[in-house]
Length: 199
Image 1 (cartoon, rainbow, N blue to C red):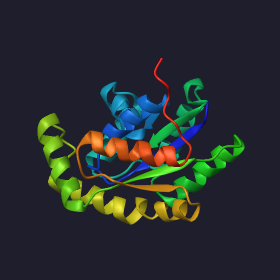
Image 2 (cartoon, rainbow, N blue to C red):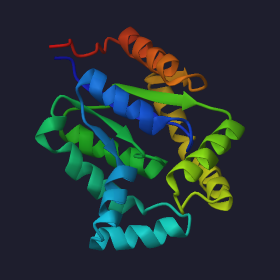
Image 3 (cartoon, helix red, strand yellow):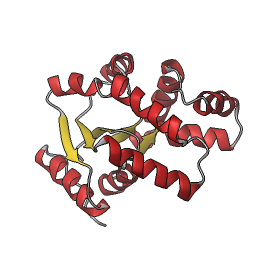
Image 4 (spheres, helix red, strand yellow):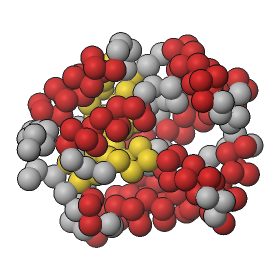
């Protein structure tokens, strides 16, 4: 089986979570979403959950060391042996270096970075709608704007690092879910990453 070590990057509201779940199923690899791991800990009121909740409620991002430890632990698990899809990590240059070191130790590297490209105004519309539908208290308009600014300042620049390596696939994230999914699958197929055959 071809390895598929993938990273999906895009602003909040770009559809990363939804497309991530579809990629995970299509390619038979676990989705490693830092947001999901953190939310599960908050729900279970673990020590990590309490730390993370205070940070998220302030609209800030979880510190690099904490996030890195969670991700390394997850991609060391047996179901990630043939690949994984990272969502939410790395999100800055320091985390890119940390992930590089970890993968180097395993004689591995990322195969493709999927960039979901969505205009800022569409991101804001989508997040506001999601907040209404899900009753998410962390998605106030001020927090949304703050998070998008952090993304633009800290996370968007990591794409330049990966562009220099020639592994970024830019995907138009505007359209219905199936259209965006097909664009992603086509881009991965071009790079030799084939979907898992149906059993």
